[in-house]
Length: 496
Ligand code: AHR
Image (cartoon, rainbow, N blue to C red; front, side, top):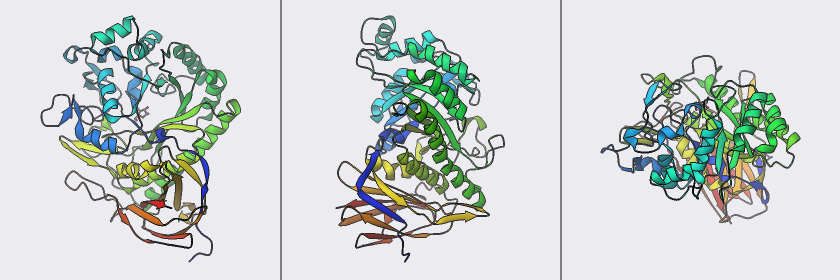
């Protein structure tokens, strides 16, 4: 046994609350995320509630999904919300130029989205159009959704069958305005942001949390300019970071065909979110030392090549333990940034990129990433606990990264929950955690791993990768000793 524990957990020392919105989602009009994935209209073969598929809603409710971002993404800056209200058969059809140039019939619009979030029991996060929209259009959308009195937009909403306004807290002013949302310079966008957000009104009790478009990955200058020139007018600043091996400009590498070198590179790139959050936070600290403004990481996740034979514009990819570990690492790192990181949204909920569920007609499968969201849901809103980790190293060629990543929190019912990722593609890990500050009498564990490196869940075999009971541990005199399988995510629940 190692003389020094791998980790020391101080169960009586909290380091802040883990915002439940770190477990948020993102659904765009892209490929089969909205259409087929969430919305099936009047398809008689798929059980649905008002056009929204029941199996997916049930699966997402089981994750306690806190917030859902919509309608994009790049699509948001081409979306004109008035095209998506009123009788469905009269709605304008448009071309989804970003994603496969397919026809968008606008059958899923504001009312359908608000119905979806009601069914999910989560908060809506709407992203407005700056790139090709007007101030008036954005202003009227907010009025349509949230104004209770007599006004042109509130009356229009009533004509469309909704009397009372909806509650809407999170509103994004443009998406990737440095790229697909308008190719802007930060100075120009900062001014536009100030102008547009002026008309994003908080009506009555509905207080809007305004989110400005933030940086692409490590564009620290964007953060600096935005904070300096528009910080006073925002509540949140977004950030986008995707994990992929190789370089962005090259063709994306497949989701199911990878060797151990690509596995290692993927893990190293997932760890990079820590540096990004640290450095963007440090810039924000200069302008906002009290941390009023949150980082909203409203797009994160793996980006691999599309599955063979599928539309390249649909970004449909499979998912393995590699994705599950990218998710687990992100969550562990997110918890350490809970004072500045207010929200994170995986891209994207269903059928797109690092989806938590895939659908095929009436069939649905849960991906390994889903299971990590489920195993980690106990951390939502919990008090993070102080943890010192001294991980063994995972080395490949001349590079090394920590092999084991751990997080711990106490939920409202007093249970201490620990999440552990062993990111090694082939090696198990013997680790020990010294438990201080509390004596525990019962410990239960679950583990997610796969028999083979590239295992995934398919529609014919949907349970190849799923959590199982975890018993490979001992607990004696406040020392927890665990044998973690290779490529695994483990969750433990400790009761006093
Ligand atoms: O999630 C897919 C796309 O990635 C989004 O539409 C865009 O914001 C980002 O570039």
